[in-house]
Length: 508
Image (cartoon, rainbow, N blue to C red; front, side):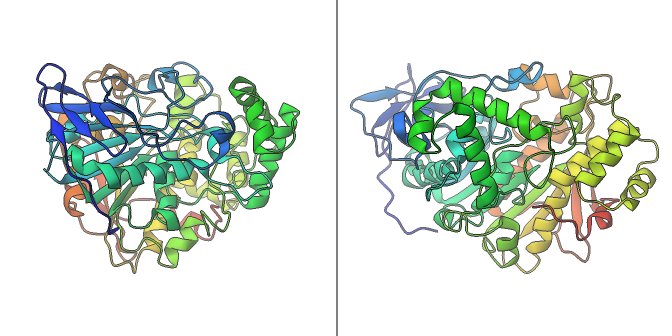
């Protein structure tokens, strides 16, 4: 880990308002609820306003006095999420949206394990508001949840030498953790970074970024790996399309002057244009699916190589990894919008071809899932392309790594939408965070989710963060041992019935 001076831990206790902790930029006052201290909305970098909106992050300016940290800080600019998924993405207005939330049970010198959460949302939505870390703090972990720049603000590529600003935000947040977390009771030399969906893809990318080296000891990827990246040419093509839609010169200064609202509208228009020429390897999936227009860019500097290639060459080999996915990921994008039953055989076959699978793959899928409808097959196929197969590839690439690699699959099926929501994308999060009683999470879990499963998953994540160990063997290509989390959890070898179908298919 990085050999840096850790500042003295300074904590004052005020029973009426909560503890006061001294960070390098100033003092913050949190709130104490049932023995858990929460500090919300602490800036880890300067507000990216004006021309700085598209530039790498700068240090947070110091403040005088004691800053109140009792309420969620601002969230990054983003387009509204359509119902019914909008409940998962509440927003808070304000400029200081490069901020962190911290939960701890022992601010001071406890040196507890630290977990840093990177929320998902396709690199264009998401924030840290709904992720309550109090159960991790209850169980001896200091939990940090971050915000970072999204969409064009985080991932715009033009003709200059700047790229991956959103990932540089994540690294700045990890730097903040390294420099300040001891004052909150955390051990800066025992940090686990974890995330879900694009947050997990970020984690897989951070494993290979030179500026992130030494900032974390362990990594957890939930439904995401390090495969989806842009080349510089593709990144620039999208950046120029956005500038053209705005009617401005393709420079960061000109795009910044267009303003937040116009930029968000331009991004939506460009995404609509791209959806008419779907290409999973570039920016989208099957016809009608949401276009994932923003991704990390392999620029040769901040991100030297495609992460999966770099990992196969040994990048991140000293970092313990826990990686996995849910069994029916694609149902979250289909079922709530009544899309599952509208999928035809022809649409499923089109999706197979767009994913560059051979025609024989249709038979493989129908044999592996004989009772599945075309929509159900498409939901599985989407999950395989985005999550399952990349996770397997990443684990395979670490076969010779000195650090451990462990795989899991979440197979418990939600009863929501008459049981059709299944083991969908995002469903594991309330179990990992032990938030089964949270009313927002109940939308995805239903009214009676199994608490023993949450106990097992949450304690597994805590154990991994503390020690790097989990209660099943490490992943090795000869056996492919995987923990399947369900109401009756079971360890299986090579549980994917169609893994071989994807052999040789390009996922990048």
